Image (cartoon, rainbow, N blue to C red; front, side, top):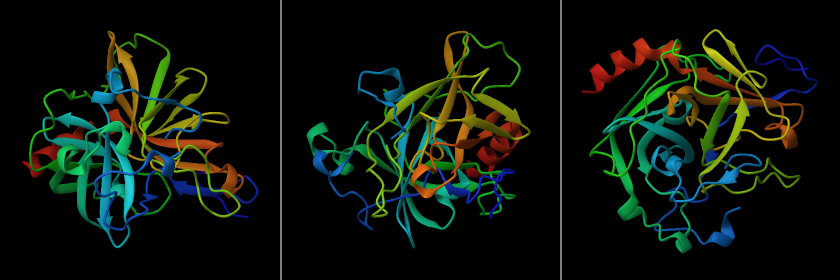
Length: 273
């Protein structure tokens, strides 16, 4: 019996909600046929016209292992994401497109910006204990002019709505018996109630997701709340857990509570610049 995240659920499985393996160790290439791709569990595909399409980016990490995560621009050239996404990476590229299919017109040469550096929390342990799992990625050039810069929620301002919004490029279904999860590559989103489905626990947000939620590939992606009608970042997706591998994304998710890391973000930006 294994215990992670302070809960015992029989054989508890916990995985990083990001770090979805890329099929090609060198990245997705120019594009991927739609037939090879299947995001957010039971979520909705985000169209290129949706406001979320200009707030969220895919991150492609290359190193000993290639992986896909999600991130959010917080300055003209810095992306907020999860520490476990970039730790060990030798190259990081931000993808500014809602999906990486050939049918969408995606071309990595036109829609990717490489990082110049990245910086993750010095107290991040590298384990699935969901502590200090935050990082910043600085790009070599500014984000596209039609993309938005999102604020980090201050933790005090009144919320305009009870709705929280999750967005990410992760898988839509856990691993099957063959061990292969449904593919990632589309930006998808879902919403939850902040009062009834999300609980703050110190530096973490704990999310109930028996039906819909985040999964592999969504790590580093944002949880948005509305403040005076503006979407602001309240969480950074980190870990999911469930009773079995085939249900790992249908139990609990843990995100970093973004306001807890405001001082760290300010300091990290100083070092990046």
